[in-house]
Length: 437
Ligand code: IMP
Image (cartoon, rainbow, N blue to C red):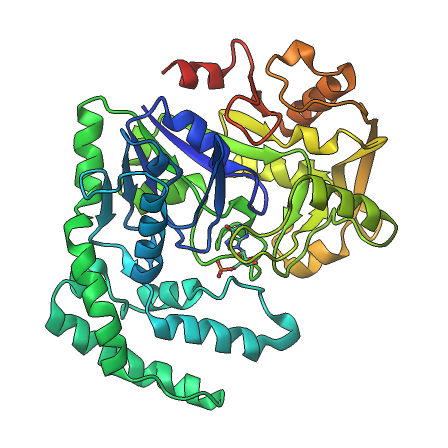
């Protein structure tokens, strides 16, 4: 069994908790795109883990975790995270953590270029995480990237750094910054690459062999559908493909070996960074946004930036369901809406008075959109920690059903709090089958 988990909105839907829950039933958890721009918070007892680069399964001592070929890896960030997890008592060895030899490395000049690129864009900036993600993927597509396998050869590593830095320094100097020195970069990265060597693996072969042995594999998407470089709100996107097709390429798994796709949807929407957000709560709704931000702790787990908050957008989520082919949805953060008198759901878009039901390709059009809302009554009582669907207030149950119907996909799991056991699994759902294994 191979299941892909994907955020259906603009990220931060609560994937960490769901992956952590499902990881119990799986043998291997693999990431397939992105890098340490992600930020998954997982709470286990009194311990809080913030995972950026490593799959959420790493917290489970008996699981093997994989960083797939589609990822961009900053070795410094990798070992900072490994050390942080070890300090909390979790064993991390090359036997249970495998890094693809085909993944690309994020170098310090990528970080510098991320800064200059944002500076150059001024008011049009993307609002990136400044981790060097975009420039590393640019080098990959430009066929000058440094892959993990290349870096294992000190001569090749040195040569590639020197060659790439010539070009990078031209831009860095243009922006009034000191040029970087190839020797400094090499001396910093070479010992980290040596430390990485035992973790390096032909991960697609490893995953194919595991599948043949009937091991269960979870493919964990980072970022989310509307941040996908092809399908998201371009250019306000990340530089990889978090969508289901990206899982096949980025983990090196044949598409027809993937047995199911799970979408993570939050009861409202958020966005960090710039870019269109049709249902954003602005002006008069700023107090509701504030309430949601505080109750939902909607601050970036990596950058600590306050997240922009908005109503649930059924048009955008339907688009995500269609693109990814969700078989089941995990609906998170129901409890965050407990106090609201009324809850709005965007059921359609209008541009210049004309109704559209598809998700526009152009960011400019998305900014012109007037959302068409349906207003539902809030339940105004606590759902925190509820574990049985029938124990949810009637209006909360209606809200869940309304969302499921408007997306056109079953909701198989409802999260009612950050802890593992604050979860409802719906009977006879596809999701229940995945949990049963
Ligand atoms: P980058 O991935 O750092 O290049 O940033 C590109 C866009 O994706 C920015 O709007 C970021 O805020 C957003 N982004 C990147 N990673 C995440 C994430 O894990 N959650 C939410 N937004 C993200």
